[in-house]
Image 1 (cartoon, rainbow, N blue to C red):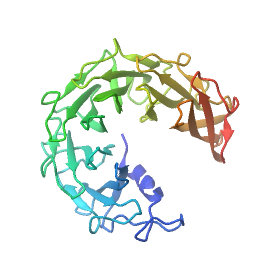
Image 2 (image 1 turned 30 degrees about the vertical axis):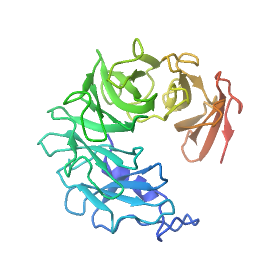
Image 3 (image 1 turned 90 degrees about the vertical axis):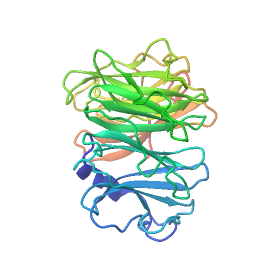
Length: 366
C-alpha cells in the first residue's frame, strides 16, 4: 500500500505550472490548489475533448477529502478555486492508492476506499464537465464488507461502461457500472479467487464491452511473496472469455513492493505487459516484456523477453509505448548502477516476434 508521506514526493514532482496556462519553462509550475494542509496522491486523466481532470486528497479540513479540478487543453482551470469537493466522507488516516479515468462523454470516473459505513469500502463517482454528480451526491457504494478493501482500479469499455476491480484480503472483485449508475454484475460484483491470493488488479478495455484483467497470484508472506502474473478477459456479462487464466509469468522473483505494471492493448485486443524482477540477482533488477494475443496466448518466450543484459546495473520501473503501425513496441526504464549513485533512462525497441532492435543492452537515452 502507498503511504501518504511517500506520495508527497510524487505531488512535489508533478510538472504543473504556476501561471494560468501551460508554460514552456519547467521551473514555472501551474498551482492546482491553494487549500491548507496536505494535498496528496494526485491523478491526472485527459478526456476525448482534450481537457484534463486533476484529482487529489486534501487534509485541509482535518481529514483526507477528495477534490477534483478541470482544466482546458491550454492549462486554464475551468472550475473556480481549487476545484470542487467530491467527498468529505471519512477516510483512513493513511491512504491507499485510488484511480481516475474519463469516459467517452467527458465525465470523470473516480474510485477509492472510504469509511462511510464504518469499514473500509470502495466507492465510485461520475462527475460531468459541468460539475454534475451523475451518480448522486454520495456516488455509488461498490462494496459493503468487513474485509480490508483497497487500491481500486477503473477502466471504460468501448460501450462507455465503467469496470472496476479491487483487492479484498486475497480475493479480487470486479463490477461494471453503466453511465446511469446501474450495477450490471450484481449488487456487490463478481468475486474472483484461487488457492493462493489474488492481489493488485489492473484493467484495460478490449472489444466493444470486454475488459482484460491482470492480477498477481501470490503465495507466501505478503512482504516477500512468491509472485506470479496471470490474466483473464471478461465479456460484457462478466463471463471469462479465455478457457483459463493466462499465465504471463511464474518466475516468482517480483517483489511485494512492485505493484502496478505498465500494460497496454496491442491494437488487436491482446496486450503488452512489462515488469522488473530479480531473476539473476537479489540486488540487481532486470526488465522483461511479454505479449499476450487476443486468444490469451503468450507470444514471446516463457516468462517474457529480457530487454537488457546489463546485469551489473539495475533496470527498474519500465513503461511501454506502442508504435502506431503495431510493428514495434518500445519500453523505457530507469537504469541505476549497483551503488545507486548514477541514474539514467534507457530503452529497448522490440519487434512483434520478440527480437530486440537496439542491441542486447538497449539504448541509452540519457
